[in-house]
Image (cartoon, rainbow, N blue to C red; front, side, top):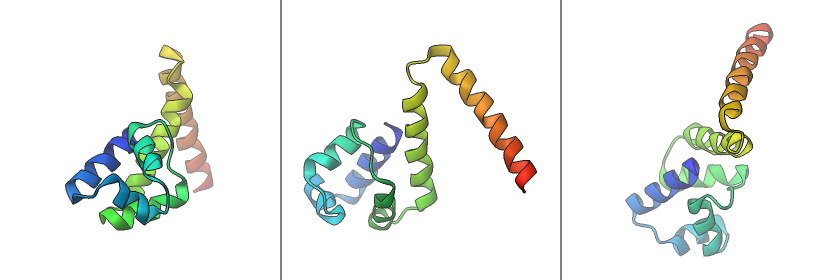
Length: 100
């Protein structure tokens, strides 16, 4: 729900109503509400619109969006989830090193 919290924060800072943001994204108000509450994930293609509307770096939003996806995968795994993320981080670093 990291992404959704940030979207709500940005929307409120900008003084936008849910329906106004929904209109800009061409979705219904319920969809934006669900994204903010973390019960629905924004589509990756929508990140550019969020970035433009809130004048925020798209990479920041992509990072939060991806962090939510990762958390969703491991959230019910207790201690193993964190261990798995650390193993994946090390593998990511290794693969990046040998490819780069």
